[in-house]
Structure formats: C-alpha cells, structure tokens
Image (cartoon, rainbow, N blue to C red):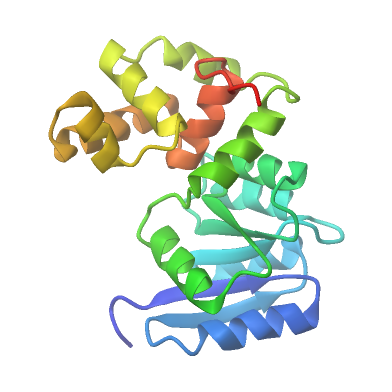
Length: 225
C-alpha cells in the first residue's frame, strides 16, 4: 500500500449514498475505504477499531447523529480522524453544530467527484476545508443563536498577542495564509507560526474552529447584508 494512502470511512444512513461514495472514493489510487457505517454510533465504533484518517459523515442520521459522532471522535482526549460533513443544505444549523463540535469542513451531497476528492485530500493533509463564502455565511448566520463558547476558550482569547489576534481576525474573514502574509507584509512562514500558536492557545483543531470561536466570542462581527 502507498505510504500516502488516505484511509476513509463513509457514514450515511442511506445505503445507496453510502455505497456510492465508497465506490467513488475507491477509484482513486491514494484512497482506501476501510469501512462504512449506517449511523453515528457505528461510525464511532468503526473509527476506533480501524483508525481512518478521514470520515465522510452525514450530519443527519437516526440515533447517534453526525454531530454527536463528531464530538466523540474529535474531543480533547481523542486523537481521532478528520471529519468531513455531508449535507443537503448549505445553511444548515446541524452543520454549524458539527463544525462547532470539531468537524473540519462540509460539502453538499451534490458535489462533483473531483471536488469530493480534493476535499478529502485537503482534510487528510490537516487543513480545514473552508469555502470562504459558504462557510463564513453559515457561521455568521448561526453564531449569534448559540450560547457563547466555553469560558476557558473565551478566557484564552485574552492570552493572544495583538498580532495573533489580528491573524485570527483575518482567518475568520476567510483569508489564506498567503493572503494574510500579503496583508501584513510578513513571510508566509511567519503567518503559519502565528496560526499554529493561536490554535494551540485556544485548544482548537484547525482553522474551522478558529473561525467559529472568532464569531461566537464577538471578536469578529458578521457584516450586515
């Protein structure tokens, strides 16, 4: 097996969708679908047995849904897989809650094959899947409707340096490291270091949770339409 092969689990309560995604992913030489699950509980069990790198997780499933499964697999004590949420609707509060719980991004179920493959590769590489317009719209739509983030995380915002706070704001606006470097007139490696420190100080997995935290804490205020 190629050392770079991404091990994937597909979780969806619809068998046709589940087997379809699995078959599609198996067409790629750098992916191996190691298991499928019909609900969140089965997804958690399979992931703990097989240790995949990425899970395609339907957000709405009977019993244990994608939100709770994501929470169990990405919690502070878990060294779990990256979660890519699958949804039918882009402005979906369930998706927002899944991102808040630790998912790294989301895709609509009518996504093209190439977009799906790219997304899995991005997630597997440890990057957050932030489609800026859709993701920021989703987060800004629901951030004010939820209780504020955990007190320790809010308190941790105060530990950020002024530059780290500035970088977090720009991340929340959807800028890439390259764009942030250009805006601040610094090297891209410097930006990567700042982003890494922000995530560590706030106890976050990736940029997606950083964006959620920035909006929920009021550090970034959604622009009025």
